[in-house]
Length: 350
Image (cartoon, rainbow, N blue to C red; front, side):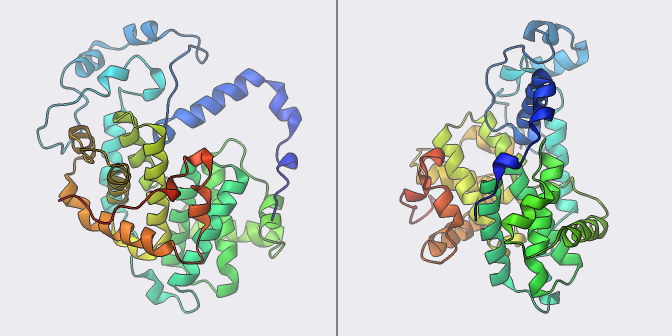
């Protein structure tokens, strides 16, 4: 069902200050968790040259970046490939703090694990219904033209809410569209309007029902929306390995299949991210699918997540002949490199 995107934004608000809008859009797209591909620094934001930014750093930060600083904890004593040092003159790469932020992601994902057995407490909802919901959210996310991180946060909110609350079959779609709205409010500059959520849901729910569900979800999760999802971990690896567009699309193709399957909740977000990039490299027949740089910045060897990679590959191959085709339709377009048309690997390298 088409969404009236022409009525989505208020033109007057967007035209008041074009420069401010561009600055905020750049900040949103290139912050650490969303920096999929960063352009060369042009100095349009902040009016400071890269050299002035570098010279203004404190000696302690500069010395940390120029030496062995920036080494991720748990990197097994490996020598740094220097990906962060090479980009320290680019402000939005945040090289001074990137390792601490990534450390936080890896620490918090172990503290805030998702319950892989929450469906046992649901009386009307099952795995198949969740798959149908997430498959539909892929289309909704694409229709609204939202950022990738918004989709993964929305799926995470769905799973976390279903862990703590019983939901009826008739309310499951309401939970899904409301989680997408919440995620968009958190990640986007211009989230979709409630009226658009009603429209894309075929007018099944009213405005009051969506707002009431929004309050219920936020309260049930104690307003804790900042949780590690697989997205920033995969984005980080794609950045430090300087992956090309085809690799990026292939990695996210596998990652979206990973979150589509309820059984993959048994794996940590980092394992899903690592396995998705590994599978992308294997599918593209790269000679070293898990390079030294990948090992260093992921703190993991290929054997550490092989079971996860195998599970994702098997599911992606199985879903090919099912009715859940939203991801395959999305990645069959030229915009996403038609990666879904590529031949899947039949086995993983030893």
